[in-house]
Image 1 (spheres, rainbow, N blue to C red):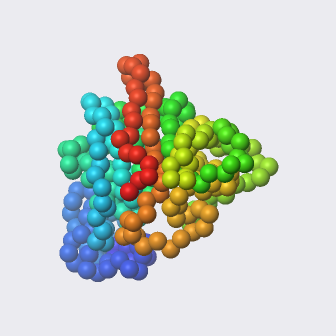
Image 2 (cartoon, rainbow, N blue to C red):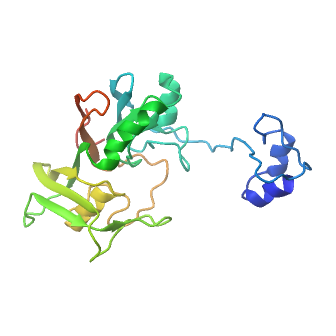
Image 3 (cartoon, helix red, strand yellow):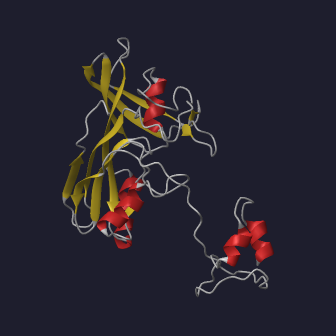
Amino acid sequence: MGTWLRHRLPERVDIAAMLAAGRFVHDDGSAVLEHETYTPHTFVWFHRDLPDEVPVPGQIEVVHRDERLLVVDKPAFLSSIPRGQHIRESVVVRLRDELGLPELSPLHRLDRITSGLLMLATERRWRGPYQSMFQAGTVRKTYRALAPVRPDLQLPVTVRNHLAKQRAVWQAEVRPGATPNAETVVELESVLDGLGVYRLTPRTGRTHQLRVHLLGLGIPIVDDPLYPEVLDVAIGDFSSPLQLLAAELAFTDPIDGSQRSFQSGRQLPLR
């Protein structure tokens, strides 16, 4: 088993030390031994070492809580789910502990650097009905963004194109000529200190859709570290939040048929 673990896991994992400490275990909790005979289809369990994480500033505001749903207002830079370098500093890990909800799970995606409303299921049994709303596109989502004003840009406008995002590539790309898979309605609500406050209504939910669509209109979102160019921003630099806010959610509840709507308490510009 020791030989197999060394083959299976990255070199940076100290297999010998973890085996000696009994940190690899079988389903029954018994320790995996260095010279134990390898058996196919065996499940081995362990907790990986977590790096120290820089605490993310800002509070997670609870907008709504009931038996089935939790709606929170997330600050920028806080990951929705534990992944990569962000484990403890994520909405799910923080709130599972703080609220005593061990099965809490998000029902849709919200980028780490995006602020605003995130909806979660309090228990596993409620995930299906609510997650299906997002998959079917029946949840009405409204975002607001701070971006330059172009006097020659005719608004409102509906942006439709084909977006693709490759793994290990930071930016999404537009594929001209391909069947559209992304659509956003863009409206200018007001002008604030020379910048436009835009109301964005996505009708699809592609990765980085809003950021790419505004870039394509020549009005990239203020303080975007990926568009138009990828910036080298330190993981602990919280000084310039992306000026994109998930502002509103509205839908018909699939369980009881009631009309639900929620609004973020945050305002642009985000500090």
